[in-house]
Length: 132
Image 1 (tube, rainbow, N blue to C red):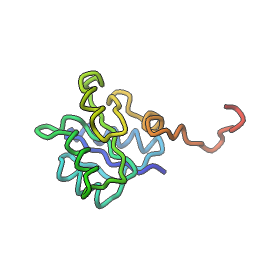
Image 2 (image 1 turned 90 degrees about the vertical axis):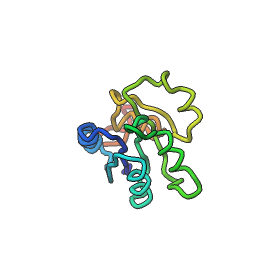
Image 3 (image 1 turned 45 degrees about the vertical axis):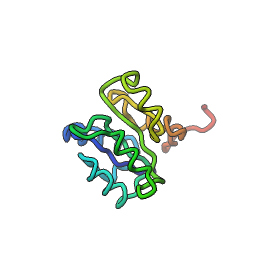
């Protein structure tokens, strides 16, 4: 099962997306609202993926991702940048970051995360493997 940390300064969004992801088979191991909290939780919890909002109030999600991948960061953790803004608004910064990619918040789901990570859809009880 995919273990996820969500980093966003909007507590309503944090709780809403946690519910969506957990219903879709992703274990949310933690939530953070700031750069310092995100780095601490990523180190302590060692999630498989960290979803990072590009705009963390007065802090930068790009800085969170950069620090996660620094020699002292949780470098085995992959990060996905998320935002209410379009990818085109940040295309150059996203491409230059160590994030595996970007997802608009409106499309955020277990399936879109797995797809971006190249994991495909998980098999669920009753799925017919010959129907694909």
